[in-house]
Each structure stands twice: as C-alpha cells, then as structure tokens.
Image (cartoon, rainbow, N blue to C red; front, top):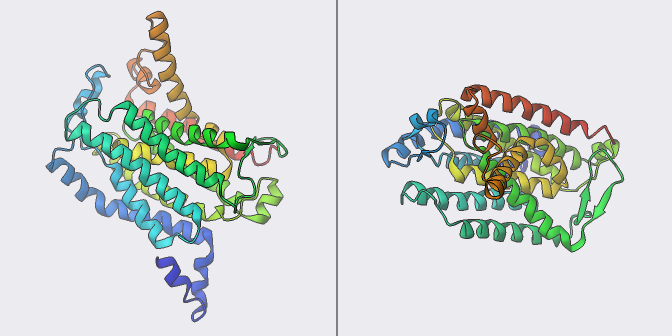
Length: 360
C-alpha cells in the first residue's frame, strides 16, 4: 500500500508525516477515486457497448424511458474499481474495519454482477432468482454481522444508539445479529430500488456518504466524540478514508451517469454501494441516523411495499407507478426535475442528520 510506504519514510523526511492524518488521506482517496473513474470510464463504456452489455427497458415503465434502450449497464464496476484502487493506495489495511467495508462493497457488488450478467448476457429479464439473490445477501450480511458481534476491539458491540439522546443506548444482545443483517440487506436493496432514473441513486449515495463520513470521523476521534457526547469507537476514524474514496468514485461516475446517462451502474453498483452504506452504519452505530440521511431510499422502499400490498389486498394501486420516482414522472415531472428535487431533499436530510450531533 502506498500509504504504508510513504508514511514509513517520515523518519527520514519529516513532511511525509502528513500521511498519518486521516483528513489528508481522505482528500487523497477522494481525488484518486475521481481520477481513476475519469480515466477508465470512457474505455469501459465503449467496451460495454462493443459486447452489447446493455440495459433492458421495462415495457410497463414510463414511455420516456424507452429511448434508453441500448444504454450500457454494469457501469458500477467502474465505481468498485475506483474505490478499490484508491483504498489500496491510501487505506490502512491493518485496520480490520477497512477489510469489513471492502468485503461488503465487493461482496454485494458480486451479487449484483451475477444478477446483471443474467439479465444482459443471458437475456433473462428477471435475472437471478429472488431466493438465490436474497439468500446470498443474507449470507454475506450474516458473516459481516457475526464478525462485528465477536469483535473484541469494539466496546459497544451490541449497542443501539438513539440520536438526539446522549444516554439512550440499548444493548440488543444476540438480537444485534439479525438487526445488523436487516440494516445491511435493507440498505443494499433500498439503493437498488432507487436506481431507476439517471444519476438519482449515485447522487444520493454521495450525499449520504458525505454526511456519514463526517459522523464517522467524529465518532473515531476521542476529543471530538467526548465534546459532542457521542460514542467513541476506536479505529473507526479510518473509515473516513473509505468514505472519501466512495464519494470520489460516485462523483466521477455521476459525470457519465447524469441525465441523459451514457451508462447505468446496474445492480453491481447499486447493491454494492447500498451494502457499504449499511455496513458503515452498523460499524459506527448510526443505524437510525442512516434512516434519516438515507430518507429518500427509505421512502422509495416503502412506496414499493405499499404498492404491492395495496394491489394484492384491494386490487388498487397507491401510486401511478412504484418506486415513487416513477410516480412523479407519470404525473408530468420531467426526469431532471425529479432527480434534482430528490437530491435537494437528500441534502436537507443529510444536514438534519448532522444536527443530531448538537441536539443531545
């Protein structure tokens, strides 16, 4: 790792001591991931077109989406590569939490890749069978949750922290494992459901990660945690570097995914990013805050649940179409208007989540 090499030289040349600072490496991680994305994306998009790895558009969706047929998909691989390269350069892999985050990102990304492969290469519109797809997600989340449950370095292993209240800490005990699985798998699928129009999901992921990264840094810094009266979690500050890499990769990909999109990230990107967000929240004890900062993801998921339940019980639909971003499209909102307004709401929710630091 480049970080290990450069910081190891600080005894001989004092300016290299700057690499010990998480904030400095977070900035480098974001810039590195951004540049890697810009470098590889054009070549990758052309390759996807050449091998006909394109998106299949639903016939029952908004008619404006029919023109998107033939747009390359599986672009989320670009994001995963950019984050991995950036972390290999600037991450401290002696920190166990970095390994957990990378396993989550790449593991959920691999599940999404299998689903995308079946849809695009095998031309199977349904992709991976729901039982296998959900089962694989559950299995991966179970492995992550058991590791975190047995982690001796975490003094608050099974604790659930409630925002706005500094002393509201609930020990979930063994129930921590199924709860963590629910958060991780739920987050992964929520981002996947939101990824239905150009740039919406990846933009919201960048916003949520920016807020989560700030909370992660403060929780991993003893002095700041004590001053703000939040749980101090030794070692988690290093995850800020991962957040920087994710933000850089997301912004770089948004350059090509913005309306009208040149490439879609597919399940390989949405499941991977969603799984990473959920895992980050579980590690840093910000599971409830995640529901706030990722409020749009929650609303998108609830809209799908309400639509399905209502139709099965009454035969009527609550929305013109679910997830809810399609509902607003069918009401006459243009796609860019839906995207920007959802981003604005995402920013407001991110600011509100940061406000929980002082309202305790």
